[in-house]
Length: 524
Ligand SMILES: CCCCCCCCCCCCC/C=C/[C@@H](O)[C@@H](N)CO[C@@H]1O[C@H](CO)[C@@H](O)[C@H](O)[C@H]1O
Image (cartoon, rainbow, N blue to C red):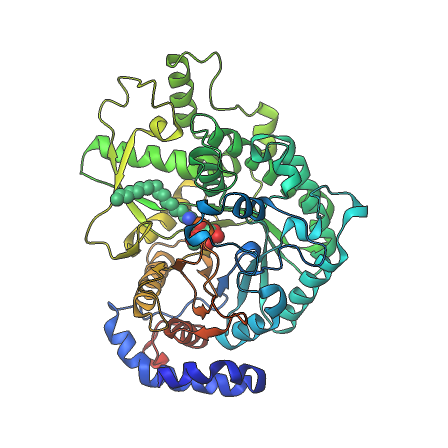
């Protein structure tokens, strides 16, 4: 039955969406009976009535059309064209899922999936081809593309969550040093203002930046991502400083100029795995807290509590001095900036996929290795994973209990905010991926169970959950070699044919039943 549903699904899209829904229901009835039994006792409670279930994508990862309709070049276009060997299989985003041309097919997928919200991003250089926010430089074709898509989503009853920056910096701004240069915060704020003006009448949920930890650490720390800068001693901190400031400026613009009329809200996506102590010792428990502070707190603390986490300041200042620096490698916020940044988030957005074990690094606090002047060495933590945690790619391990703990940590550390899970999902290697993706169903089911426990057992205020991703797409440096979609995309086919996976039908059942059981009468 599952195979039959999949084979016919896409011709149905064009003809009869209602028929698709019926096929999905048939699939659920005959296949999910087995699926649920195979999953480790999912929670049988209904999601709260106003809880929002959604999926996410990002512009560069799906749109393609990299130089069409007036779009300017951005960092990842340049990176993949200039250093093709830095991406697995020498893949690029030139065509990606071709969503720039096939957005209405994606919309049908969303409608049939029955999601409440869709998280997407706007490509900065599609709106402002040269990056500069000068009213004369707005690319009307880019505006029309997003306007049409956003209006169609609203028309379909799907709430858009719009990310302004998902790693695709206009190349002109990279040439100014990108996120190493605090002036980028002003450029971002000006771009944000234009987007609020252009789309704020219909977009009510804004995300300023996606995962600053990822683009700061990978782009300016290790150099594994664009722009490829290996500046591990200071690059991450400078990038974090500019990013936090950029976010705060955009939030203030919205707050002062748009909130009263548009009545929307603004947040920033912060990503973090959960960390478990390797051993039950005080040293390893402290290692967990240090890693959380350097990974998560570097971005969340200035925005929610004011300033960098206290121990990050203490450690980096002390180590900088011991290393012979005449200044601290950690840029400092002025008192005025601390007050300006604090409180600039209307809800807490978090991306999380995995957990790691944390172990105190031997001698970390007693000696300084001059070859180890890095953001990583500052933390003094060695990470590993528990071999019992299921995994198909090196960076994602199935640890739903860690997800619940992370939600509780946010609740307790950052003032019990409303939490929106803006990304969570299961990554498969291309060699093991396929449309029969029971592993993904198991992962999502267990993570959603953990989320329900956080809501009902722990009293954590989680209002939305978002699967990454609607469809397989360009996974940055991993090219098309890792798959996270509910829908498979054939990247060898010029048509980029989309085929629903088993997980797509499973999530369709969840959005319909609003619980994790195919038989909703079992839910309470
Ligand atoms: C054998 C020992 C292994 C130890 C390894 C220890 C490493 C510890 C440090 C943790 C690093 C975690 C990296 C996770 C980052 C993710 O949050 C990030 N890659 C997620 O980015 C989003 O994910 C989507 C899927 O990759 C992506 O497509 C999307 O655009 C991103 O927003």
